[in-house]
Image 1 (cartoon, rainbow, N blue to C red):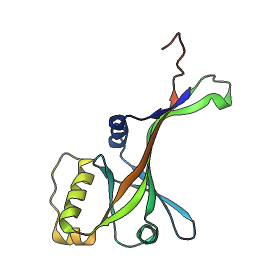
Image 2: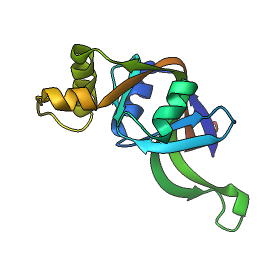
Image 3: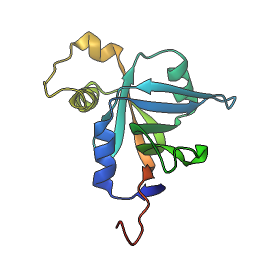
Length: 161
């Protein structure tokens, strides 16, 4: 089994859109890592997130806006030889996006971002009350680097290609 790099931007987008949870990785000023599961939205250029406007995550993002978001699709166990431990692998596809968090403060931009997030989970169109918009923290990861891999891919040989 092999690990293959995925370079096709459309395939990377398909992996992201197939996930229901992303994992936001942050690092505070004392170099303590902090990773949390999040709901998200993706527009092909940036990843959008929302939360309350206080707490550990909020404080870390304000002090160090560099972040990483990871997606993982698939959990099928596979092996080349059932009796060889190091031949076991989880067949999956992953995406890792790195960039800088940008806080969205403008109400109209918040609504656009929230629409992108809700589109990840529903085809319904939502309306947001003024207090809801005021009280939600909305931010995006401007993607500076994105990588994707497929793990546990079938090894290609002349007789099975």
